Image (cartoon, rainbow, N blue to C red; front, top):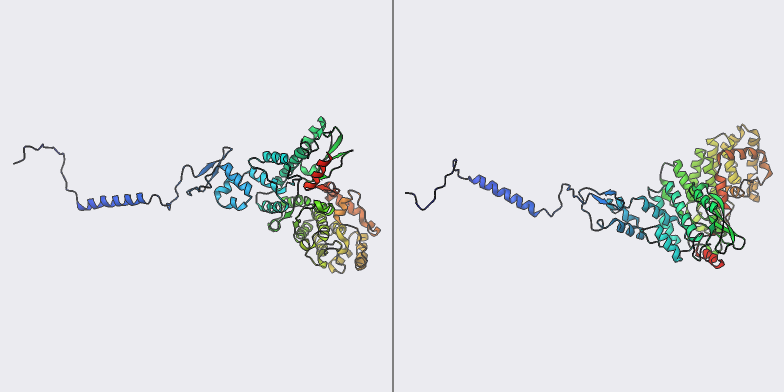
Length: 501
């Protein structure tokens, strides 16, 4: 009989007994859930996207993508501005290569401009506090610290080897370093500056002039210094100078190239833009300054640009029949030979006498260049460009050159060349060159170049016309550079200026 103290509960449907298998299934699912919960702190094999880890907001509002699924390290999580300052102060390029996050954050044009500025700016007065403060403001957020020549050379090698470095960035750097030099040492109010004030029309002209392509710079502007004396400001592609009747001062050289690394020459292909970039880099190598400056102004470093690599570029320019580039490279090679012969023969010239001259000897070029020119063109102009560089380097007993001379359409030049090849051994022995200098000498003579030996007047007029049609504009740029006898490169030079003011 049922217990009357119990309350009856009506249950709809049938009541089923829970099977043992169902209980085991629930227990198994519980064990799996507990296992997943305990392993949640371990890295997952499948990528997990985090809301704040796939992108980092930059200061300008843009976002730099991170690698999805990877955790952000404590260093990567720092503010972008702080990461930039760490990189720019250390100048350690492996820092940017350490992770894709750093590469994304530091691949910004402003960072590239700062690096290029530090690599190529020639600071004439690194101990001037006002100058340092102005440059720090110009390079925000970086606090400017002047670099020594060797440190700057190492930075130049790193920058030139970077894939983002190009001719456009170098030209922008050219404008930046000239702007800083003008504001600090020409128009500024510090004791190291002229305190120059330009006439209003000339100031407007200067602003327009600096907006041009730097290769087209070349003008004079009138003004007065802080003492009220009339003076002239000259702006050229390589230098800044101030002239007056009462004050002499050396020119400023705002930009200097100490090295072009070998890796730059190894990259292929050699495009027109790359040749133009090499041209610009070589023009800023201060060979002439180091030859003419007194010892106390010479920096404790060397110019590390391989002449062997330049010879390869000369060969390539011959095969392209690029006379403009060829003449520029030959000019640089002659200046590099002068520098290596006088200052650092052990580090700058390792070639044999049969190659292109050794320290203390007369400048020469590889004889293979003449053979390449005869294979490349029947026109005598290309061959004559090499003769103007150094005629005595010609292989006087080469059969290819002899055959080329015999089939010349210009018989006057062909006959002259055959006779000259006979005279080459005697000219070498007697040190009686056809020209007293090469293309660097020609550029230094401006537009008044002339043959030093009357024997070559027979083909000189045709050669001048050929060069005029292929090297237009280059000689005017080189004139501004090669006439510089003394350049303000180091602290002592500007120190001399300040004592005169």
